[in-house]
Amino acid sequence: MERRITLPYCPRKVFKPYHQRTQRWACIVAHRRCGKTVACINDKVRKAVTLALPHGRYAYVAPFLAQAKEVAWDYLKRYAQPIIKDKNESELWVELINDARIRIHGADNPDRLRGAYLDGVVLDEYADMRPSVWGEVIRPMLTDRQGWATFIGTPKGHNEFHAIHEHAKDSVSWYSLVLRASQTLIIPQEELDSARADMTPEQYEQEFECSFEAAILGAYFGKEMAEAQRAGRIRDVKHDESLPVYTAWDLGKGANMAIWVFQVAHDGIRVIDFHEGAHSDGIPQCVKALNDKSYKYDTDWVPHDAKVPEIGSGKTRLETLMSLGRNPRLIPEHKVDDGISAARLTIGKTYFDNHRCADGIEALRQYRAEFDEKLKTFKDIPRHDWASHAADAFRYLAMAWRELEPDAAPVTVKQIIKAMTKPKTFNDLMAELELEEQDG
Image (cartoon, rainbow, N blue to C red; front, side, top):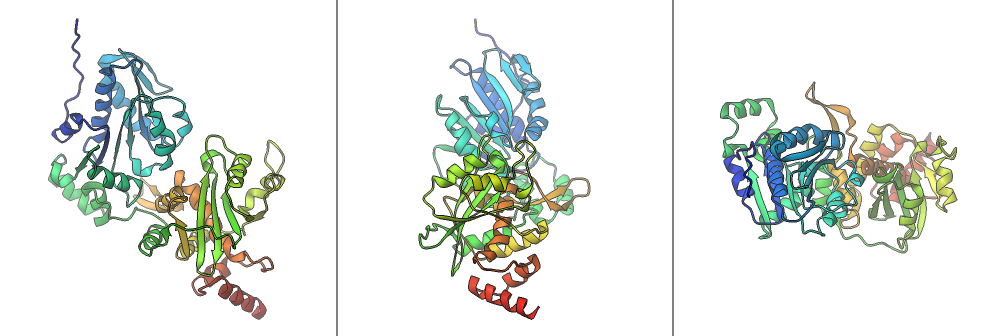
């Protein structure tokens, strides 16, 4: 006998077409407080409980696990309550009466997602996620059962979410929806007027009118990366076998290990590759990945704390790199602000390979200052997220590339930043620094 169950959800008019879609893929660009998360959670619940296949598996993914729990966990329990058979508060999953399971995840720990299949997934605030989470982790999980995916969020510049939106709106295999506050009428006009008065025009256009053209708020390198794109310096960059190949590392573990691979030529820096660790990768795994590439390496530039012995082994990371046949050299000590200033100037002299460096390029676009929610202003420190490791590694690249001549005397951070605004080539710079040292 058929059993009828009513879920405690009444969809807003603007989301009814989404619930009725037939496409496998969907992209929703929506203004703040329009109810996109509630709509997507309920869409997932309905699809899970009506799935014909046994043991359905669904995921909701936000940039951070804590964020996912705060935003979606209560919604999931509330709206699925009439059909929940079991739930786990610590692992954040509910199991429905047909044995389908929906779980909450954070993109900051992609390893927690691996190893299973998925019948459907929602990626919320995708603009804040590491792009490789989709291609390397989630998309393969959808192949076994031909699962579906929905990307939702508010714009944050021309990033991976923007690229998905552009593709979705012109593809018959995608459902595309854009919800602007001026069109949905969900938020009262007086509240919108108040928000507009309290925000910058760029903030309002981004948050309520879904503008991808507004710069990413607090971004350190937004202007420089936009100029690199306009100038055609993000493109196919060939490996020149006549030039040595250098690397700049941010030493961490797994996805926190970021490495830029670059060459220095008469026309500037050529960034030809980028590598990030995965799972629990350490230095040995990343060295193997680099050695598998067809490059003839010279120096590996590493942060100054690489000379500090690790508690477990008693060895320094310099010693570990040398034992693996690498040639590490310490970056000059510097303040983070000085490194960011050097990186800004270096981006203006850099060519990036748009394919091999795609994740690193996106990280440089997304790298931004921490926002103080209480004071409603940006702090003087970078936000620590998926983008910060690649940005730190590029900061080290910016501090290192000026010292690449074997006999070059050490230079100070002040000299580097001062000199970077003047010379056109590497040789010009070194000649100027030599004169300064002679005068001093």
